[in-house]
Image 1 (cartoon, rainbow, N blue to C red):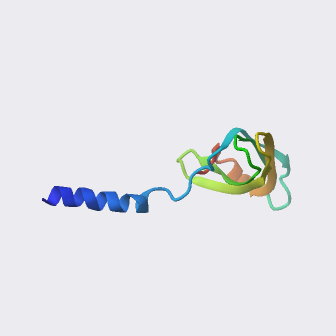
Image 2: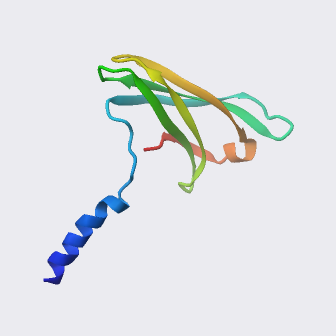
Length: 116
């Protein structure tokens, strides 16, 4: 009797512990890249540019809002930035943005990824 009750309780609480967000449906992401465009400045900050290719596979224009994050060797997120833009129906577009990051933090980054 206790086992079915625990199973039922787990099923009810699963949505509470599952991720609340995921990548938007109908959009495909590829070519995530970054480069340093300027710096370091007098505060040891670098200006970086991050870009990602977004393909809209739907029949409607999409207002895309994603977050790109940088992860260090210990799998900690050390930096993130939003990238936004409109991608027309059945088209691919490069979305890009720039932001400042401390040179010290930048040197710890081992991987860039799109946050789901």
